[in-house]
Image (cartoon, rainbow, N blue to C red; front, top):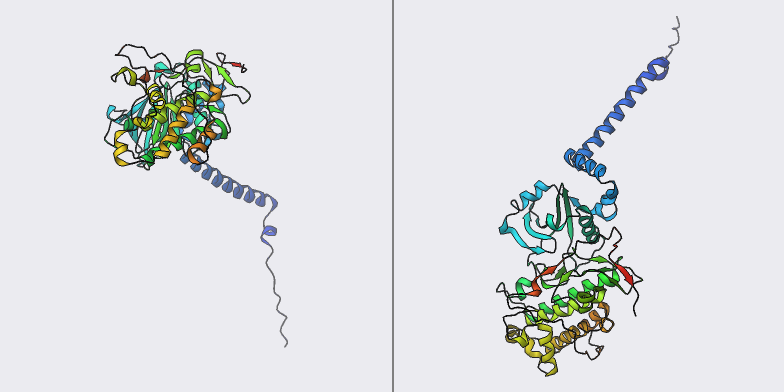
Length: 416
């Protein structure tokens, strides 16, 4: 008897086995799980990047200072926001033994972060930063808007109540003044000194001509030139620096700088331009070559003011007497030294228009081409002071005008 044919019955699709209401519940349940996982991942990432305390602080700052909401915009995203307690711990509560020096707006301390990185922390003095946030933001925006190998690098900042701190990279050999003013026994040979001179010149060329913003430093001096482990120079302390309009020859403003390095037209009449930095560079070059301060009232009267003394030697064809005696013993290239001194005199010209731009100065220092003009006698300020005064060490500072705001005290002038 023939059997009945076997029938294969295929199971119904899963979605057909479920009622429409059951399908809706399942999709809703799966979608909820997926959304929960996404939110959990985002919460973990958010928690790792921004701590709750930092978030509360940012919210408070945004509510209290709505005009400064651009603080974390643009280039500022590339730097770190440090907690005050972190910096306090890194500097051992700003221990005096960690003091590296004092800038125009406050002391600078050496510190070590928990990850082992060495840092330099600039703590703005409260009595010199009464405007608070504007000048703090000004230096932060200034230094983060420019990048060059001969400019010091800003790592981050801290704004905690009245506290304003800037965190810079720590440079092993600290500042140039510690070496050339004889505060330690380290000797710089001519090759290293020439490297420092050229590096500072290139840094200033970038600020004046090559950076996206035209910037005048206003306080070029040995203590503001920092040296890395290979003695490559980096210009630091932008606390007095100013953005400068592209279409103006100079600005009329209140003097802020260091006597002894300041151009006469700026120190006396308040006429500020990049030529003020160039004058300061000329003084610095002579200091590096002679290894002494620009003003030393302990010396005989004819030697007290270095640029004036250098010019007297130049007129007597004895300018090589200016050279650091230790460098004489070590040896140097006379042609290069004379070339650097000649460039310094061109930077010290009494008429700002006679001072060459930094691009020409870099070319003169690095090229064998004869680009030199004959310098005329530099202009000198009246140095008749009491012996207990040292004008080269006193920095006269105005409250730092923020480049984020218009400076009502700076009225643009056209050249005569």
